[in-house]
Length: 128
View (tube, one colour):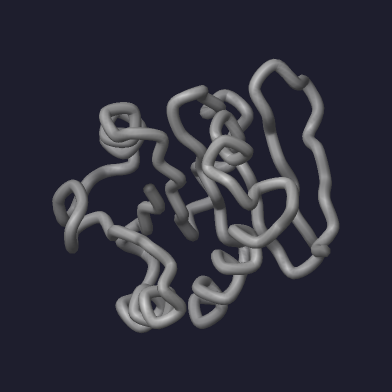
């Protein structure tokens, strides 16, 4: 299940839907509008293997790695969110739900930075 944070615009959500990428968005059809950051992690833990996409850099922390979800911090412009979500979902390291679980990833033009469970160093990947 792919979940968008409220900080991702309606136009970007609609673009993802037009590409037939299955997504839900906090405040639209998942969770409730106005959820605080501290409420997001417990919300995700109650879902079945979600991948959470956000533009909030506070979610890019090694301490947030967990087997039950993945967190994706989009370090790109608002208008680029959908494009980079699609790129991440097609990347060979993250192209399945199973490969994404337990990861906290920063997505940027320069590539991907990733924290993984039981790995003490940040891992970097280039765009394919």
